[in-house]
Image (tube, rainbow, N blue to C red; front, side, top):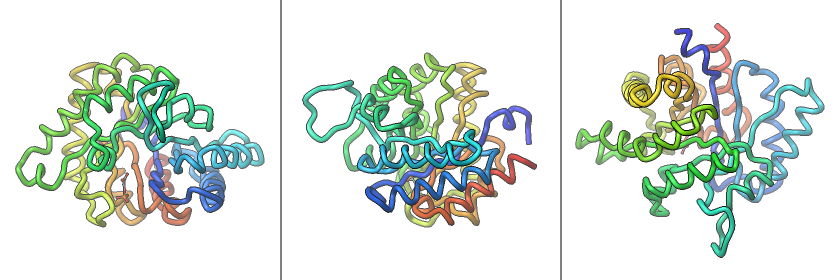
Length: 269
Ligand code: PGA
């Protein structure tokens, strides 16, 4: 593994989507917090639904305090509004995520782009708002099957990345994360092969480097899309894949644990 890759701690983030919004979410957060002690070379983040954020954060704090005290699972929002406050019925702001115990936020997930009409400009505005509040964004990019088949993968990903690059550069010290998630691989059981994913990750690293060498060196580029325990090592072993954004397999501690352990084994080898 290159020294530059080694300098980036692997990040494994669980996106629970619209699952585990109550007591089951608190239990899962506790299980992930216990898991964190077994994978010290990996940074773990969970993104519960809004209704479970505060309770999950509390549970993770309690587990960390009961253990060695130094391992804490970080909490992420799955989305947020770009405004700090205001008349936006049903929305949630960066300050509210912060108040609920979040330190991270997932932005521009393809489900937000596809089903809720989020544009590149909206994702950029949210990214700016997140940094302002001290939340670290995981900005998602990725092409649809039609775009891949038409040979537009890199063009689409570059367009999505270009929208947020100036913002990421302005906050280079925060070291945000980017998640490459091919839309056709999300929730389908069809993951990109390591070489297929690495090609896009290397392109993203190159675009970051064209803006700033520091930005390229510090930004963790996660792969997302049907990551499971049995494909995690192949993906995470690639030179430009620094972690995973996990949906389905993050919904129970055993399958999430298998991915976290694969990342830990690679990072400690
Ligand atoms: P999946 O979801 O792991 O269920 O494919 C990934 C994601 O949407 O972040």
